[in-house]
Length: 130
View (cartoon, rainbow, N blue to C red):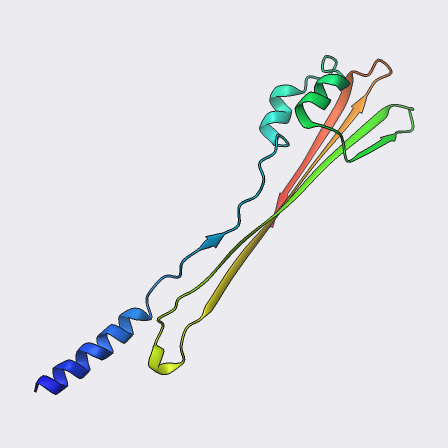
């Protein structure tokens, strides 16, 4: 009788180990001022100057001119977040552990057009997460 109880206890432990959650290791991303909130609160069309934009966001990734000969600055940011782990004790007698992984990609683009006096004429934001 004690042997049957012991064997039953082992199988219950193995079964419960299969329900274990895996530890998550999340790689942190570097913080940036390049956010929708910062753009909306710091950039005012017709008022904000190039020098202020440089203080807030730093140097742009790309500087061009449009058809109207206005200077256009492009800022872009991409981030990748991954979480990996394993559930270490899943049904040890029936196949070992499982490796688990998830990932998220985020992109953010800010395009600022300046007038001839180096003041923000217009801007647009494109933000995506997948």
